[in-house]
Length: 196
Image (tube, rainbow, N blue to C red; front, side):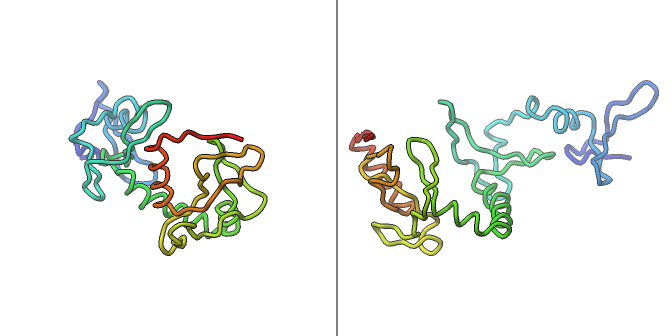
């Protein structure tokens, strides 16, 4: 007797001729009932609706995750582990899946990663690559060193001043903690961006 590996059911739809509708999972001897096949494989977006009680990260047990804001809308950033109904919060997804992907990518392309990290910065919601290395990996305020004391350093436009002809003018390198603190301070003071 077959058993669905997603829901555990031992019954599935049977035609009048007696033929059952078990669907096999490619490469394994596991099977899905017709309902799970339709909801998971065939049409996953329309049938998976989760209540707040069901949203629990199966890795860490958290009931909360980060919020994603895009196009004026805000939603919780959960990741579904298909074909099961188990979910991962954003932190666990980054830790278990994205981290491994980036580690492999860095091993294959070490020069490419180093090149982009040291030259990349943002000006007016656009990512710009400088023609030379502009980041040294040390915070100008607290002297934290990237990969030792902090995760990342970034270029910060001091007092929200931007020179569109020279994107590196008015910039300082800050660690992630100092950068968030300074952004919060400027927002509380109500300082608006100035473009030259």
